[in-house]
Length: 112
Length: 109
Image (tube, rainbow over all chains, first blue to last red; front, side):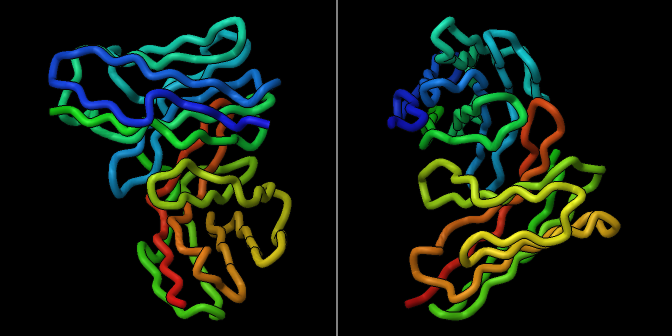
């Protein structure tokens, strides 16, 4: 069975641009969470979606938004990119919100 | 802000030795989880210990939890070069995982 897949794997943007990252959860998983991992640090929670509804939001500015589609895939959008948004963005899925999460390999976003 | 803090930040051992890493957290928890991250990859769930458990084993992994001290430890026995990775503890308030900064483990062959 396919694991969590994220696209693209790498992305280079410039300051002020907008980016959309995509995540396909494991088949049957209805909960998707997004994390930002800056180099040398642990992942920081951004959003959780369950059954297409936002169930949690971390301490990130409104430039960050996300949504979950009827097939449970998800998009993370970041507007007005800043240099500090350079990071590995991880998506994780689980059967339900409280279950252990399965992570994708992330999207490496570099802002120039 | 990070909920958990792992200690040490970095650990280097020889293959076959045991590796112990610790995690401290700040608020009450329902459970605590340990994850492994190989360089440039996503995180892999290793083990979950509930707040009413004191010790749990999974293969070469042993996790302890002391809720009175708000701390947990992960022991990897008979380490292998393939265990080289970063290890994170994470607590689970409903709806999100809060990770520490991780322990980077290097196992030398």
